[in-house]
Length: 276
Image 1 (cartoon, rainbow, N blue to C red):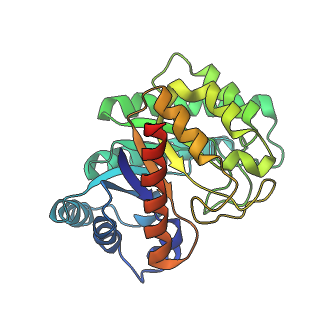
Image 2 (cartoon, helix red, strand yellow):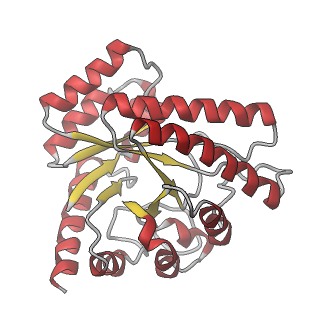
Image 3 (cartoon, rainbow, N blue to C red):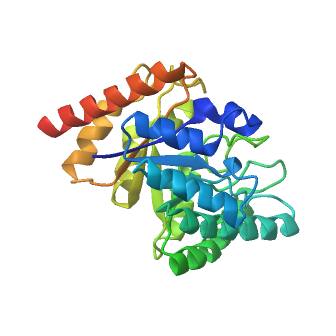
């Protein structure tokens, strides 16, 4: 098992400058993670000095960078803004390469008022295709998430309904687009997490281990204490010999204990799934 973590609980501290990206790397190493994930919003500066500081921190703590979570918004009704989104994502892909990350998490975009389904699907498909060209060039895997709402967003994800998520994936079945499968997000719309997993299981490259208090609400809790069917998901992934990354999305805001307990739960549950 290869374990990473997206530290949503620390977002405010990093965004405000109270903590640095290097602090997160050190903490991730202390937690015993194999890698750390980053939000693209961590990187207000991307100059060579900043990149070198982060790469040095990763090396000094003997930990990898797994994935950068980006917030691509290809459903914006303004064509100029969609072009800017593509330019931003291409820049994010280059940054991922410079930091040694293997994956870039991508999203369809927001459910902007006035964006029709047919147009939105086409815009996302086109944007992803152009971004995939850049990713392949740099050896980065794009991982499309069954997403809910990005930290900097005003609206919910355009492809939050699984039927739209699947329509976009199907339109790109001829590409190397992977899936960052979130274990809880479908619950917000009371959708069947396991049924969705079955439809994308052969494209999962990162498993986002996340939990919600109950179906029908967006209320993150510590992984293993909510409604997400994590044991069943792990068992199914083991059945298909999944050997990719597990990335804990830690959003419980319970401090260090939240991280430690989530990690312990994931390790134990994965082992039990293996034994079963």
